[in-house]
Length: 412
Image (cartoon, rainbow, N blue to C red):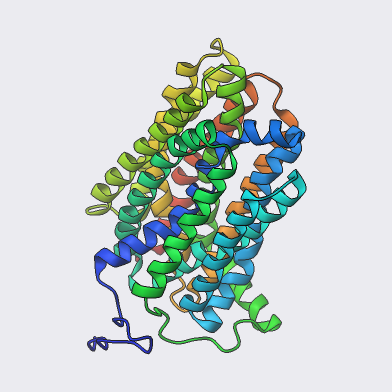
């Protein structure tokens, strides 16, 4: 392989060091949990101040997720057409501006609009990060790098809920949105100063409708894409159920304070970091599919525990938190494998593949949010039961479809 040029057209190194690559991926991907986890402790307070219904309050979260999913369908092909860097810079600017706008919102409708715009900016950040990973690395090595980056993401997710709880309790819920905007500005400065363009060859026809449909069809037809996308959708749906419902369950149903709730979510993120470390260790000697098979055992144990919490055990924080530990361990293993596995077969369509996979995952999360907005009834059961069903589905997918695809890819 010929040596890469020392500098690119922006004056930056043609390829950043591994440390900067991991940091960039962690921060760009971390904007998603920052935009949700840091915001969660503020939900009861903003609902009270703005006089909003439960469904409208949930829409500030699910609206972001839906825009995040739909936005990826545009941002992925756009990054294949224009390059990763322009899409990242524009998306991060929108993410930061929408956060600041949300902090100034006088009613729930304007807040929902700002969160939707923030979701579009988030789509650019996440698609750009996943596409850059494929530009830089082959799938197996990329999964190990992704596990490192998601470990950094986990640290951000671990710090976000306590910080959000502290800001909401001391300064008010609007400061959580200002903190989210600041994270976007930080990522924007980093990309501007440190991250060069990673796409070696742009596709000038990527946005033409006929080419766009053909590319989507090519990606969706691949069995590996379908298996890993279903896995990431079910695994993220399990986590999103907790994100969307846990503030109301722990604070309003079980009576935890906002600070204590922030620690609960932060501790879960810490367990997730441990899961990514386990993933990196397993990937050093196992394939993506074998690693996913092992990680699914954690998820299955967590799903069983959530089923007991939903239908057998009396409602309590420990009954929910113990299975949540196993679900977060499994999530730390399954997410690096599934995200890289979905994009890996498409080095020339990495943006499109990342976008389509992300859209399906986000659409699943939006549907989960819609279900929760209708089913939350002042008990722990809707959250626990939904996590049990989705977690069991993720484990079954990892044990069946992913393994079948791995065997079909193995030469006879």
